[in-house]
Length: 185
Image (tube, rainbow, N blue to C red; front, side):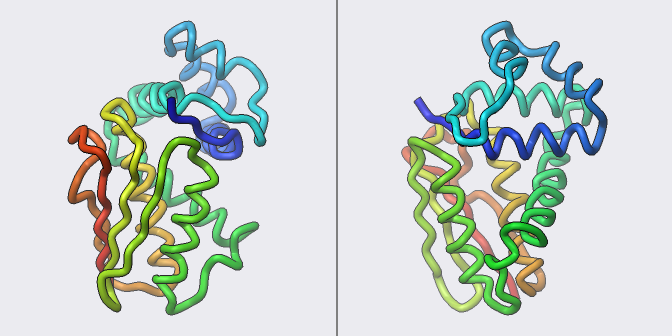
């Protein structure tokens, strides 16, 4: 079973409260199945591990309730979270003009946020890279939108232009790994 670090869960909950208020967060939680609702009704510890399945169900409920099911909205929301992080506590992870450094740092940070997922970044040239995530299953498909947003915004913040980030092997393909392709100028 895959797990996600409480820090990532808390960042998401705080972003929802900042964007839409506690009442909206409570509404999202009320639409979860009983097992998942129980997780999100308790205090979330930043150092604890939580089911990635439950977190995926939470994200799906969030998108249904607050974005009319438009999953692309999750890309924008992830961009806002990473922008805040990279201008705050993780500012040292950004080197202007060094997309490779940022890609490797975010891959390393993601490795600490997921238990049961192996993350393999590989530079393909001066302006391209691939990142494989080994361990996600089809029911974690919604996590792909978060990953897209994180890498796209981080590359832009590092000074990359014409950023193109997409899955060449999507999570929902059910393969042994999903693969993200990154291109930039």
